[in-house]
Structure formats: structure tokens, C-alpha cells
Image 1 (cartoon, helix red, strand yellow):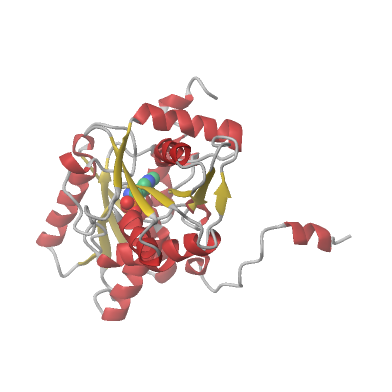
Image 2 (cartoon, rainbow, N blue to C red; image 1 turned 60 degrees about the horizontal axis):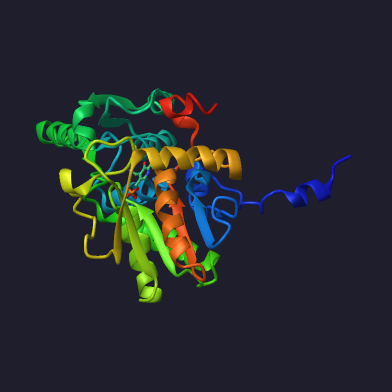
Length: 313
Ligand code: PMP
């Protein structure tokens, strides 16, 4: 018997889409009532995007605008530096649209990320892990300088469409999902696109909304996807004056919260989500009457090979 009741229990139907890009955005906002029972703390589960991270949004905006302006056309290869998730998003969208993709990324990214990228057909150039994402950025610039006629260099660190995607989608979604009640927005920094874009939108809704950015506490860290700005090439799109407060998180604290999220909330989140939670819990504890929202950039499947899981599986 086909049960309509069973159907009604599933998530609201998304509109019928004609391609994978129609599934990008409108991710759920989850209350974290077990790891933060004392306060209203919510996380946006960005792995509900089809490429399973927040980076589907900027990748789509960057590629759409490049096609519209004529910078990207058939025959060109999409080129960029990535710590993984933006690359996955480019590779997914370009598989759908028929563009080849070349990605420069630190050799230290998890094996699962590399396999996903290869599954979508991307060409990978692995760079010195000691240099983190800066090594990948320098390699992408070098490839582009040597053959500009061959590539569309997407340049997620300098491309305004990165933060604009979050200004037009992530920010408005959070504001609507909290019915305008958000008091604090906490986000990790990689390119700075999520923080700058969603943060600018939220500040425009109310200047009382506090914007808190989260960085690794040291140049050498295990927070994949995040950047320690002081010791890195600062992304041109990152607005350093926007934050009301800047927080630094230890890698081990992030690992701990990743494990806690899985065991206590049933959420298998990525490492930067653990970093976001470490900071957001502090903000929530200080503001028990507030509504604190953070972003969980991706899920934990790609990180199960990381050693912090060894004693916790
Ligand atoms: N966490 C992860 C896992 C990421 O891949 C990224 C993007 N590099 C971020 C956090 C930071 O996002 P943004 O680039 O928007 O600052």
C-alpha cells in the first residue's frame, strides 16, 4: 500500500529541477539542543547542498556570472585553487555544463576529497602541504600566467561573486529561518566569503546583530578549509573591518566537538563545523537570551580517515 502519511513525513518536496544546480541553497537550520541546552544555538547544515558543502553557492555564482559576461565559454578550462570543497562544487557544476576543470590543492587534503573530485572528472594538481592553501593559490596563478588563453581563472579568493552568493542566499535564508530573531552570527573564515556575504546582509537588516568571525589559533592547524589570516595571503574579498568580534579556535577543540556532535546530536559534521561550534557555544553561553546562528560548512564523511577518530569510533 502506498502511504501518503509516510510521504508527508519527509522533508518538504523541492521543486522539480532540471539539473543538479537547482538543488543548491535553502539548507536546513538546526537547533543544537543537546550540545547547547542553555541557549538558543542554531547551525545551518550546508552539506544539504548537492556538492555537500557551503561552497556550492559561490561556485554557482562565479560560474553563472562568468558565462553571462562571456569570460567562460566552451573550449576554456575552469581553473582555481581550492582546499577541496569549492573544487568539488566546480567539478560537479562543470560536469553538468560540459567544461573541463583543473584544480590546485594542498596534497594534505583527505583522500576522500581527492576521490570525489576524480569521480566528477576534474584534473588535480597537488601542491606543497606546508604552504596550505597559499601553495595552491600560487600554483593556480602560475598556470594562468603561463597560458591565459586556455583558462577561465575563477579566483574564488578574489572574485566578488563569492561573497555576493552568501549575501543573496545564505544571509537571507538565515534571517527568514529565524524570523528575524538572530542576534549573533558566528562563521569560520576560509576565503571569508560566507562571513563577509552573510554578515553584510545581516548587518544591513539590523546593526545590533553581532558578527563573530572564527579563525584557527595558529599558522599550523588541522582545520581544513579555514585560514589563519595573519600568516596567509589575505583573500581580497575578506572584509577585516566587518567583525564585531574575532575568535581563535584550537584544532583539538574542534575535533572534540565533531565527536560530540556525532554522538549527542546525530550530526556527522566536518572539522570546521567543530570549530564553529566551539566559538558559537561561548557566544551562546554569554547571551542566554539571544539567538545565535552558525554555519556548518560540510559534513564529516570526508574526514573519517583523520586520526582524531581513532579512539572515538
Ligand atoms: N570550512 C570548510 C570545510 C570549507 O571548505 C570552507 C571554504 N574554504 C570554509 C569552512 C570557509 O568558508 P569561506 O570560504 O566562505 O570563508
